[in-house]
Image 1 (cartoon, rainbow, N blue to C red):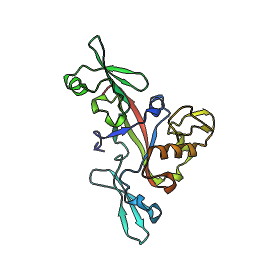
Image 2: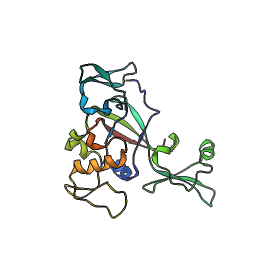
Image 3: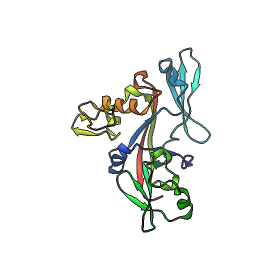
Image 4: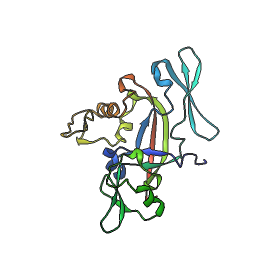
Length: 223
């Protein structure tokens, strides 16, 4: 399949960077392209998945009045590659070296003129992944499975691939607060829903939105 999504990013929250590179996070969800559907999620039923002219998956829903409504594409299709963007900070050392440092402490020297020009006036400022430049990415992912479903219908197997923090088997973190001390003791689904509500201010889990469910394979290496 022709790669139509190479230039699009997959943003990984800093809390999940370690899980991503350790192989514990290989799944993500998104409401991208489903804004109209999620205004009243219960008014729609998924009818089928089709593809557009670029080969990207497109969901088709049946509305309560039996009209057909297409959602927007997201994540492309199986085989699509996305570049990973993550928390980072640019550093200018007294030695004259310039570095990009990632949340887990890994660093890479910055030597290209266009990159050095980019970081001017941006050093020593922690930057969320959404602000990562393409050249700052150190990995790509390839989509290996892609589907649509309701958030509250996520399976245990799907949630197990999300990289949730756990203090012991069956006891997962409460993501309702990002401040220490962190608490545990939630089921995998309840933990994931606290993460969802912490990350999604407009579409809360109680609405049970339609979501894209994407499984992916990581490819490391400087980009």
